[in-house]
Length: 220
Image 1: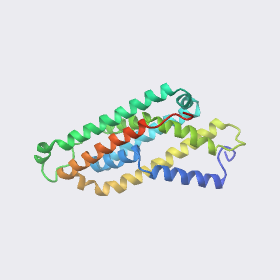
Image 2: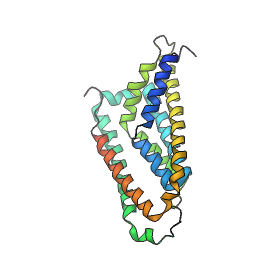
Image 3: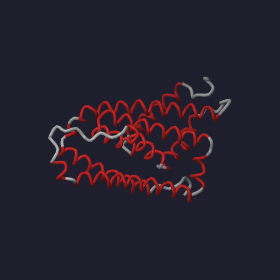
Image 4: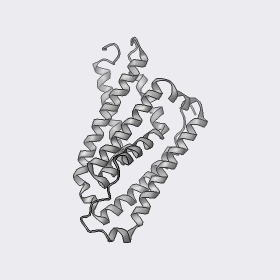
């Protein structure tokens, strides 16, 4: 097993890089915080589970060469890129529409909780926002191989172990983020604050969609 994973020095660098990447605000970070503030810890955990499932799929795709196709076939990259951006815009527009539903929000009691929705709905949103982001696929393809030991008896197994490490560490970070955001979730149940969160979140999702469209495949 020790031959399959990087040594202590490289492992420390890997763990630090993973932490920095998870702590950098992006689509997954924003979705985790937004869903926790709007739906509480249960919604946040469901979104994190979906995001982690998406990371597992990206790691498997990179390990078995599927992600490499995105790097060498710009058409496939752009297709997934546009699908992901469209999905984020759709989410953003939905949040903006909720923010503009002033009459409905004012009709709710001040301490009314946000309408509950199935756990599977937040899981699905987390999964799709991650899977439909080609930048994540190319990240796994470019980042993980740097830490595969040169003398590994099975580079593919080493890649999968590093992918599992990334998913577990990222999941723990996201759960800590959920716990932190959950402390503020009660404030998010107030109608005025809920509309504000939807409005800001909607604009940020649309902005992230535009940023995704500016990404280019490796080598272009």
